[in-house]
Image (cartoon, rainbow, N blue to C red; front, side, top):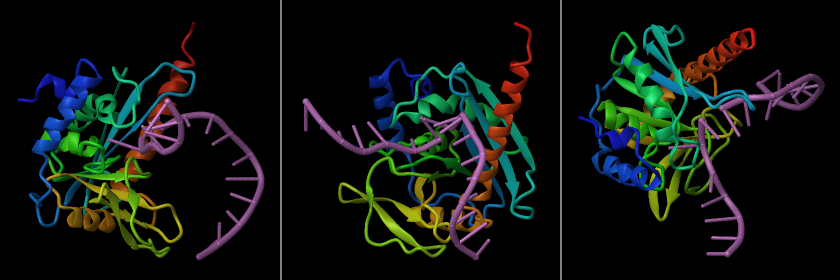
Length: 237
DNA sequence: GCGACAG
DNA sequence: ATCTTGTCGC
């Protein structure tokens, strides 16, 4: 059901066209359980510098009952067909993220994605891309801005928020997840309103800058990368 | 043309 | 994303 161009476009022009189509299908209204109890976090690790280009996608499934005790984790890895180009991150990582999510034993009710959702030049960051392809609710949790600027003052206290604005449009929310740290940039991915996105991210914070699903995915992806490259370095030449 | 630029 | 020790703050 998903056009091949949405996953593996022939080039940058095809990729741009795919993003416009995906963005047109993204839903920015709530269409998810009122209280998601099964949430996944996804993140990718790259290769050691100088090493061959690789992507390792980690998906972590968490239950609301034990927020720091993964119910399952899954890893997918391979050689990306896209280099990293700002605005086109999805095409580099999504083949592996899709595989990792598919290998989870249960379908999450919500996915927190490391990166932007609609706070993107064409309204199609990786969170939106993933959400539309899987038809699952997704939220973008980025650590820095791709486009736009924070409007007004963002307080230094945990929980402070301020609008992320671009071209006169509200595209996301800057969230100070801990006192004094650099803010997170939250945006709608698919089937989640911006208000709900911020609320869900906030409730999954556990004293760290990143919400648990994304924080654990990030940590485990890094561990997997090091483990894989460590054994590779031990192979006979 | 110049600067900006998720991971 | 990745590299990488010490150091600052709660």
